[in-house]
Image (cartoon, helix red, strand yellow):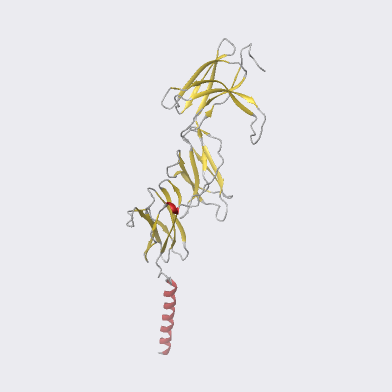
Length: 332
């Protein structure tokens, strides 16, 4: 009888210890949601941040937001496995305006947790600027390569995606193409084709709370072609070509390449000097044309340069062609 009672006491003790270990001393196994700040603001798009302590069950989390404390909108739920460590989370929302309320909500079979209600105000904005040196413009309709490296712990085999915001850079960033994985050195390469307008790019990790790269500004130049038709008179030629997309009424300059000495911060060894000019005319909905008969006064390599002052595209030049001058004006 005594041995039986001892066994029962032992069993009860083990059961008590097991029950205490399975429950969180603070939450009883329920998740804990903590509403965080707002980041990556672009127009009415922003990322709502926070932390979740999952607890003893798989947890579903989402953000509620709206013009009042009744909210009215919520994000697509995310999921986290059970655990006793707080996890940073973030989700992007659109239509967010100053004065809107938001909070983080976490729920599981063990219970639910509502984060503290917060209000989005202009005073809470933490704006940080990243200055990126302009890259050489890409050609309209061409392929753009975005490459780089992810450093630090966990940089190898990390799933990442490319996001873009097109001119005038007010729209929310949107995913471009399929996600890729960083290589053994943490490096990555994205190729975007075709690119029809200037855009800003960033790379983001596919984590509950993403890590973002600095912005990369990629300008897109109009695509210009130049051809030459000679005549029986040396130096008298017709210069003609196309501009894509159609840029009706813009000026096209025929420019001569001249050697120059590098100076200051410039390392250029050539410059272009305008010799003739005309206006681009319509041809089709996607392409415009230009044409001009000129008397070449100086032999050399010429290009057609189309000047764009403002808009989703920037100025662009054609490949060069060699022109010969008339017999009385030929310069060597």
